[in-house]
Length: 296
Image (cartoon, rainbow, N blue to C red):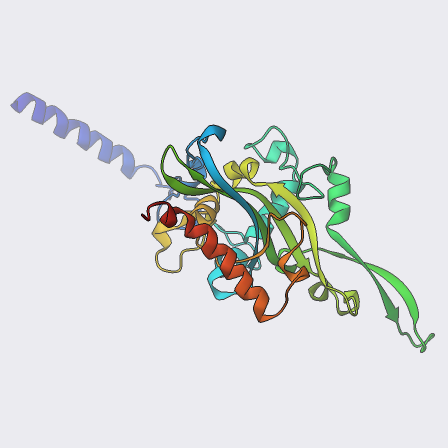
């Protein structure tokens, strides 16, 4: 024991003598966004959903919802306007996913597929076509000293994430008799922007200024959304992914269409306050279906 202690003391003495003759260099430390290295969300898998058999579905209803990003409860989807070190808005996230080549998106063999319609029959096949769609062409009056009366000029404005004001959801609600549970599956997400935010000259007088850029198939996007965080105003250490944000119903929305024989929206047969009442009636009808099964 004494021999080991003597050897250890001798080695430490030699090490200290050697270090005294050398100039110590400070360690190289790369900056990071938090006091700890965040690896959980970046390596997270989507929440596993229970498989559903057609034979077990005894009731189903397809609904179309609108999420207004200007509502307070939906702010985690709209902000930040500019990407921070660890966070992007939902629209910026989707824009990056559909416009980057596959080498930069390891979650898929190709970039996230965008579609022109909600039925996924018209696929946007090239990045060039997609990038053209994300540019708004506006005809404006240009007044100069040489031409005080003005002349018509065409300008192109790139579509930004803060121009996106609404998200459309298509959901299938169903009752699974095997689990005796009312459940849902999100099928599609539509990205809608406001032309008046792009440029005042882009306003369509007498028409809606809202336009849908493209649709994405939600099951395909889940792997990407699961690896990106949504803001939690109560606790920075307990943030959830965007996939969890949608599946846990952390957003505020209203129904604007339900599957019907006419394939029409609620706004086509009612308006104003009555349209909101109709939206609530449809929501309550679906949610109370499960409770009505257990009444005798």
